[in-house]
Length: 310
Image (cartoon, rainbow, N blue to C red; front, side, top):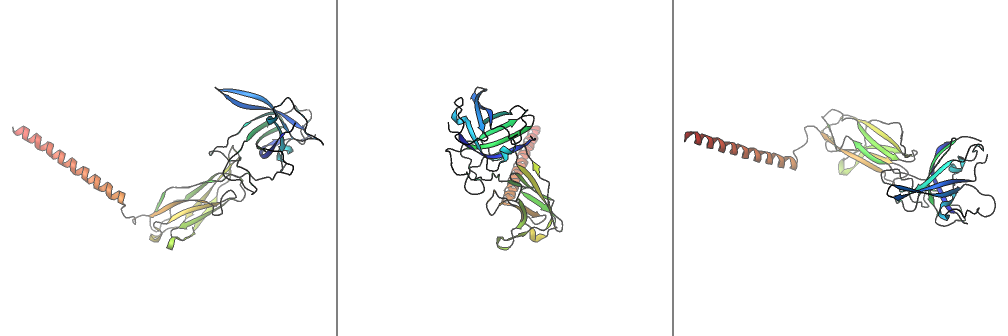
């Protein structure tokens, strides 16, 4: 029987020592059967094999007999010195559908060393646990057996970027705007992240590096494996010439295009803002309603006066 090859992407867990570990792990494939019911089907992960053909498993559905292809060795490393006296770990696997709100570990694989935004294909979430191992992995089946090594593609997750306070920040001439915070959230890996602060809106739309004290917070790790961090800027005092310019934080990461991703807010210097069209319309409507109210009250007073005279 030929096994379906699995390309391992991510594993997070701990393992203690001691044997070459199990050659295969018996699993349960868990699937939603509708109506609040779950169906379990037997499955197996083949971690290693001796010379010759893959051991036959006629008791298993071929699509659930999976040979793990782990170029980085991260998955197998957890079982290399698995204690002989410890029972086989409990293993469950299920289909995994990446969602925009979670880390997109399951980005489709390409020859480049980063994953595109598309999340095509079938994905499995595999959870293995025992007294000595706790591990969760995201794997993608390979549609056909491949003789040559499958290229390993780094899983990346592009960061979300937001800037506060938004969308406008106020300051009086000669005073510094409030501290700006650039939230860079849910990205992976942590290496290679850069945050730049810019002041945009100079002559002919040019920009310059924003001056002031700036620093990065500590990394925050989320349960889905992604990472968040915040960059802070304490701007210098502003003058009238800064009115209407925009503070921006630009983020560079291996998962983003060369220009990175940015967020910006507009600087308003107090006392320099002319009334907008919306302000003018609002004042006109307020005056019109006030005039109507005055006329209505006048008519009521005149009517009441005429009634008393009669």
